[in-house]
Image 1 (tube, rainbow, N blue to C red):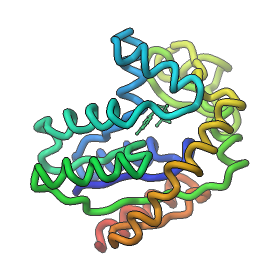
Image 2: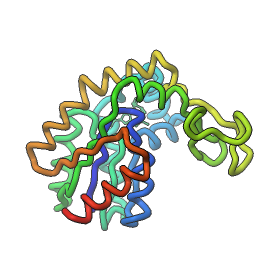
Image 3: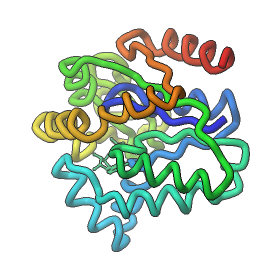
Image 4: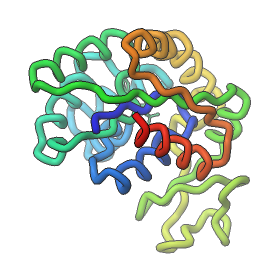
Length: 215
Ligand code: AMP
């Protein structure tokens, strides 16, 4: 199953992608995670990407397209993949199309998660991640037992640099301008599934699975 999860930052793409990974035994390919790892390692690409990411902008298409093209060649993508956070521009969507064509692959479904802007700001400003094990929390909706400490491993909980309110609003604007047009792009090709991302996580998950299994 070759899937894309589409939606604004904070819509729950990462959470749903993890569930789909387990259900279908296919990898989650998050360009945001790959870029953050490059920033952490201090690679040349990471240093360049960091400036765009911290400003709430998009990393240039050529960089992310190159990352995804290489990742799709890996053996664990043979039975499918879940793209999370890619494509984010029409140029990326076109590049993905030619890349899949050259590999004799097709997109099966694009799942769009819709959430209103104010809910996204609340979700993103409260988001925290364990520095050690990467587990996610939310200060209001899914708090750790002890503030700032991971329940699972005792690691420190940190806030992503780009989860500050001003940067969040910029990222949401970038989404509206550059990524939201992909909804009609994929609707026209007949692969789009639209889901209400305001529902509880488990409800979204059930609905998504039943739609994917029925299609
Ligand atoms: P995410 O974790 O998906 O919210 O991504 C975090 C940041 O990484 C974004 O705000 C962008 O700066 C960058 N990024 C991730 N994916 C892409 C992409 N497909 N195109 C351009 N920039 C991206």
